[in-house]
Amino acid sequence: MNVLNLLFTKDGLIYQIVKNKSILEEKSYFVTEETPANLIEEQLDEVLIKQRFDEIQVISALNHFTLMPEGFSEHDAGFDLISFNAPADREKEELMLSINKKFNIQFYYTFPKNYYKKIKELAIPVHFNFSGEKFLSSINNKNNKEIHINLYHNQCEFFAIDNKKIILYNNLDVNSEVDFLYFVMFTLSKIGFGINETSFYAYGETTENETFISELQKFVKNLKIVFDNIPNKNFILN
Image 1 (cartoon, one colour):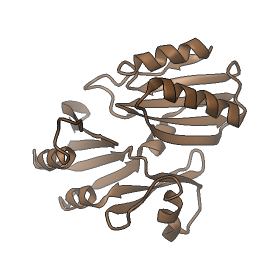
Image 2 (cartoon, helix red, strand yellow; image 1 turned 120 degrees about the vertical axis):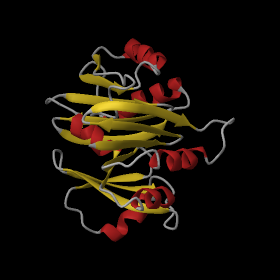
Image 3 (cartoon, one colour; image 1 turned 45 degrees about the vertical axis):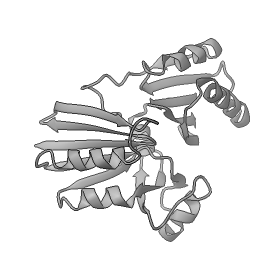
């Protein structure tokens, strides 16, 4: 069975071709000042015609989202709720829903319509999910105060959890490691998480973000790197 895994970040596309759980191919593309503005769309076109896939798994880490309790059913309000966090364009974005039963919450998020149509036009089974839900499903939390940080290329998402209750989730651009570290510390003070009583867990591109990790270690006592996204091994949090 040939499966295509796609991860969309704020400025990138990572794809993985998997056959019977063996990774055949993996590649990343990131938009920079030197690359064409439509790089991601062009590379998506190329990936989708590489071969005949039996299934596609799509993860969106784009930070157009909102978090609601499970069971909230006023789906028509999804765009309005997202707009409190980020601008949402109904003409260019598809409204999506991901439910996490483990913590009884759901994510409304948007996904670019042009990408959505290209993928759906292949007429094969496709599963869409939001990175926050995928990340949350992988977390093994205990009963204490915890911060779980998932690092991407120039991007980060994190959960604050207290006694198995989600206190906060955010998905941010990380252009300055120092600024982000300040934001984490400021957030802790606002939600009443003491440095010494909080356990920190880091996932994802921890090697690429080793400066941030080393700076964080200067301030927090309990930090564990759960895993690093090793090429051709881990994809999002399999």
